[in-house]
Length: 208
Image 1 (tube, rainbow, N blue to C red):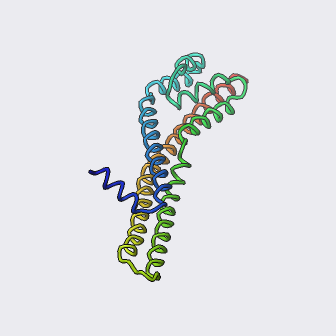
Image 2 (image 1 turned 90 degrees about the vertical axis):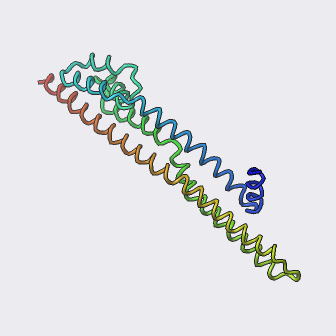
Image 3 (image 1 turned 120 degrees about the vertical axis):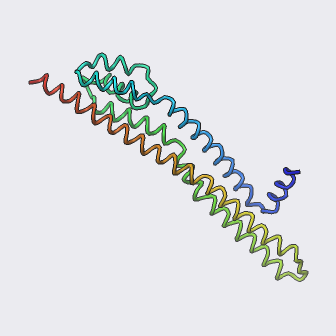
């Protein structure tokens, strides 16, 4: 019964409902994938091990710090570990490259969500225009049909409502995930700066 109502509602929205449907499916898939990814990443964070790693670096024990970071799935620790593997060559460059990799993984599909937030209302607006055009064309026809006119108006309203609904659905997670990405970027930059200061300071002391 509910499926029939939804199907009739979909049909009354006109042909523009097909790209709107595709946008809705993409939005659900992307939001679901990103929500699961961020939840899984939150389980990987290990502030206690990070403190141990930084304490080892503070004591100039790079070997111990490298051993602590080995195999960790925490993105911050993983970045530091990759940097420590190049501590005698391009340490800062390795840190930047590792941070860029982590941020790229975290920012995956954000562009798609941003596009959906803009595209869905535009598709709804296009459906509004085509629905009103159909309604006015029926008004101008020789055989005026009330159902044809109201059908065009209904098509316009359905398309608009669906487009706005998709945009609202995608906008809230998009802002949430963008905030999470910004926080991760801050964590990575802060950790990288601390490690560079500690390791760089030890190198300077050694060279004297």
